[in-house]
Image (cartoon, rainbow, N blue to C red; front, side):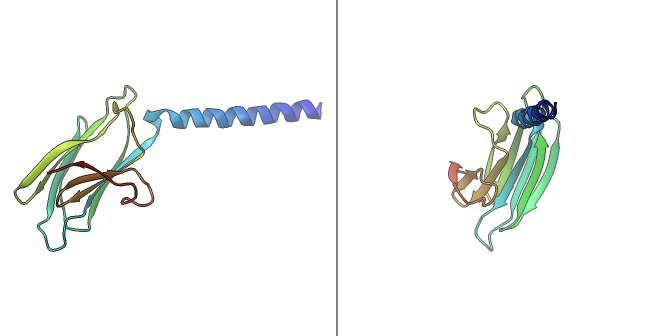
Length: 138
């Protein structure tokens, strides 16, 4: 009797852990972070940016070299979440999507570094400069 009870208990724990893992895998339940880093040269003009989605306007922000702007969100259940940002630096400007739940790959951490020659991306949660790849030019 005790052996059957123990097997049932262990089976319940395994089932519970599998269920937790499945729930975490569902994208609309996971938290997503977007970080924008101003990696422009020191003593340069400030970076102006405006980020928004269909439902959330994150407003205008001014970042000086070395500063960061970030936000977190959960995707909607129908996978239509999209955030875009518009950037201005001196006479340069650029706008693009920083997160789209319809992308083939989505990440929980989305790091964007703004540099003199353009925009860089990484998805490392510990070091935003690890695994960096250029996304686009100004």
